[in-house]
Length: 411
Image 1 (cartoon, rainbow, N blue to C red):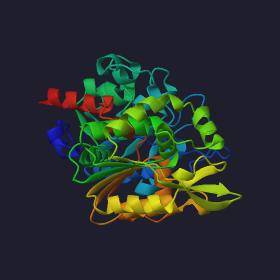
Image 2: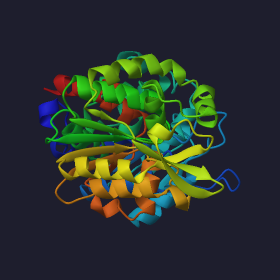
Image 3: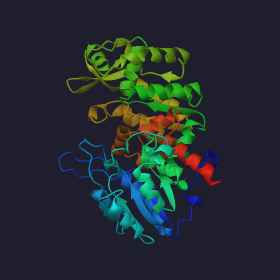
């Protein structure tokens, strides 16, 4: 991490230090029970940064968020504290306050090896407003809490694409470090975005076509990837932009999602990189609940496109067999339905080989990886969403830039 100019936990003497840690505990909430249904993000912070700082004798105070005000998943951090306590097998004290007297007194009384989790930081109305670190340093959150701490650790890579007070404000006034989750995300993503082992292949599917288009442009313009393999709605949109009539039912969905506006830029990229951007050459459609494969030359179709076909799968597998590094974002089709799992399963499996450095990211991608038992066969699975996309587009992340500026001042 030091070549990036960011201090990590290797540079921090945590013993008897009061340490403020920003984690991303934002988790899926069951809309009916209001309980957390997946503790992955809590677990990943617990098993790395938090456990290490506790073992080193730190006094740990955690701030995090859950949902946004007005959303169904906006709730307290009480259950998060209970889950964190079970994972670490040590008491985690939940404080239903962020900057009030209760929070301040709890912070002042914390002892070595203890952990506090403060209330949802987004209960503060100014938390989600973007601003510069120096501006956020003047907020109550920073001005009240910073004097109580020896240092700040940002472990929330997945929230660091937002210039929020809890992400960048403390870096302006406290010695600041990257936690292990932040460090691992940056180190890993750097390998598939700037210094990837060649050949490098990006597999882009799912429904987030605007993100995939931006990533495609960035990795090809900067000679990061040799090939981009498309599937899912992304593949359909690229096919349509290349002049293929997909049929009324499929084109209606593209129009409803307002994706047609992306097609001029896609057409331009296809003309610039005709051999590097790979489109499906056959497709699987839903005919009365059955999987039926058709060539793209049989288009248009009256049936809904649900997956890539066998010929496309074989072509993609051949390209992936020669790859040294792979990035996966988005499934090749509607893998949730058994008849249409083949494309996603076969392509993801071809990428999950020991001779490749393979990174995957995105909610649906992770779900597919879990379903097909590939989790332990991949080099790394990112828990980030928007921050991951921003990074792969080559854009700077405010939370990361703030850590860099803090490191310069610490010199």
